[in-house]
Length: 444
Image 1 (tube, rainbow, N blue to C red):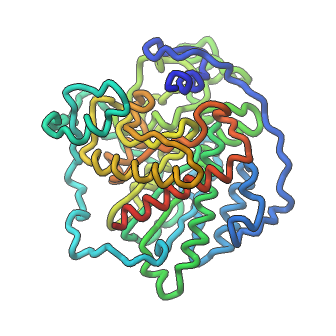
Image 2: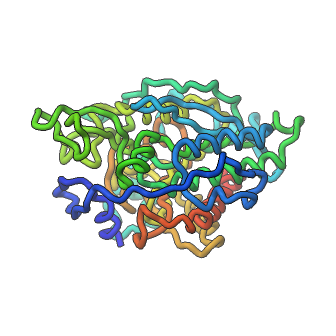
C-alpha cells in the first residue's frame, strides 16, 4: 500500500535513489469546467445549493468566501493573509462562535498549563529502537517511557532559527480560548483538500451563526481560521495548464543549461519554477541530497520561507492572538491517514505524542462513523516518509499548536489526485466529523 502511494507521488523526472520511487508522467489533461451561473449560490444551508457537487477554480473559491461572509456576518470574517509569488491574494475566512453552545470549560485563572511559554522550548524525545511496523507506533513511541531520552535540539547544521519574513495583511482577530487553523491544498493538484476546506468553512459558519447572538458572540469559545487555497498560483496552473502540478510557481532557477537549474517543460523562459511548500518551513529545513541544483518535484528552496506562500501561512498562524489550546490541520491528498509530528525524523517523537495520538485515534473513529471510511493513524514520518521543513513540524515546534496533523484525504489510490466530483460531498461530511471531534476533544 505504501509503495503504491509513493509511486503516485513521484512525478518528477529525477529520482531520489534512497527512496526508490518509480517515475510517472508529469503532465496530465486539463479539466473542463462550466462556470457557475453568476455565482447564484444559496449558502443558507449545506444542501441549499449544488456548490459542493463540483470542483471550483480560484475566482469562484474567492467569491464563495465573500458570499459566506455576507450570508453569516455574525460568525464569519473574510481575510487576506498575504500574496503569492505571482501576486495573487491568499484569502481565507475566520469563523468564531460557541461550539453547539457547550458549557465553557476554559478558566484562565484555574489553568496554569496554558501560560505563556515563549521562553521555553518543548522537548522532543528519541526512541532507542524504531518500531518495525507503523501499527506499533502507539505502543513503542508512547507507552514505553523508559525507552525515551531527551532530544538535543541544538544541531549545528540545522537552520531551525529561520523565521518567516512576510506579515499577514488582515488585522488579527481578538484572542479566543480555543483556536483551530485549517489549510487546503499546499500541493496544487490536491483539489479535494481545497473542496473539503470549503465544506468545513460552510458547515462551521452555519453552526456558529446558529449558536451566536449579539450578546454571546463576544464570549465565543472558538476561532477557526481556514485558508482553502494557500498555493493560489499552483492551483490556477492546475486548471489552465497541468492538472498534476505540485509546487508553487515561484521562479528560482537559472536558464536551461546554466549551473543549478534545468528547463521546465512548457516554460519558454527556461527558468526553474516552483518550491515544494511542505519542505520550505523553517523547522529542520534541509537542502541537499536529491534536491541540489535542479527543478526537482520536491525542491525545498534555497532557504527556509523562500516561498511567499509559506511566509504568509506561518506568520498568520504564529501571530494570531490566542489564549489556550490550538489545533492545526493540513489537508492533503491522498492516502486516508491522520499523521502527527514529526516529519523530519522517524526516530524522534514529540513530548505530546501520547495526547496527539489519543486525539487522532478518536478523530479517526469519529470520521469512520460517517461513511465507514477507514483512516490509519501514526507519525507522519513513519506513515509516509521523511520530509524535513514540513508545516506540521513547524506548527508544533514553533507556532505553539499542540494538536498538529497532516490529514491525507481519500482515497487510497484508485483515483488518487483526480477524485471524482461526486466524492466531494461525502469526503467533506466525514472530514467534518473529524473536525467536530477535535473541537470537542480540545474543550474537555
